[in-house]
Length: 411
Image 1 (tube, rainbow, N blue to C red):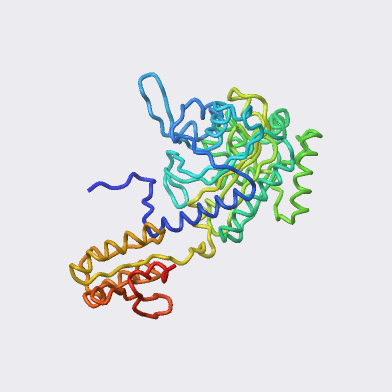
Image 2: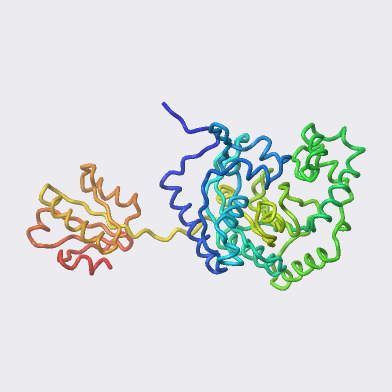
């Protein structure tokens, strides 16, 4: 018997309803902010991620699903931002649209050890706004993330924010980290010893207890920020304060991907344990230019859909079903039922029928299991009188309706 690949998950019909609702809420919320959907391919040139994420990142070094075809190397996308920026440049969106606001919903892939809230195929709900360095855009993006979480019925989350500043500022931060960690290398885990040379910012994200203890002892302040970056971040904080968006300043929040500059943020939820991040994002003002486009300020974020579902304190509200379930008794009734089903479907009414030869009692149980709104029953008596028995599954009321009037009665 074949089994699913480790780190993947079957989303069964009962769960798919919840996923559909999550996606519906996302699309409706993004529309309020004038974001439009983009659907880039699942597979890209591996070099795109090597360049954008950084050769020293764990994603590039260990976690990419690679596909080799002769002399070409492709990768299943491990995140969405690089693909969106590539599409923005390749399709000349800067020339045809100027400033753009895009959102995406879909699977991502990382070759890592599967655990709760961390799969090898997972799903992101994310957005990117490209073409403006305005701090007002930072405020909007963080507010949008906050509104999404509220609409997802998620509580108990914390929005952590920081600023990495511009390129020179970020270099100052990296140099300061190396200076502070130099005498403590023997206390770091083997991976962080490597990170010290390749990407010291990632040490601040390490989950190893010894490394966390070392990081806690570092004196990290915002002295690396230049006046312009400090002013930008102050405006972001002032805007969030004005809108009464709750946040916490987190000096150790750096985001490990190379493309981040300026404002960065992460959203955690207290009930998720060690893997407590449900979403994160930030500015990447240099990435468009680095990938071959013109200089463009940009910011975005992504939520892990699986993490969102784990973080829910109460279920997402699923609207009551409106399915009509037809029960036919006997062969003549089956033929009559075909016409009824066809008419309902042509008029936009979702419906189904019993294909399992269940008894009336068993078919009623099936209708109940499917959360049907109405049940229609056709038997010999109904055919003779030109009627259909209609049962309202909410009120329990049952009555006979003329066959020609059934559509009007249901609607």
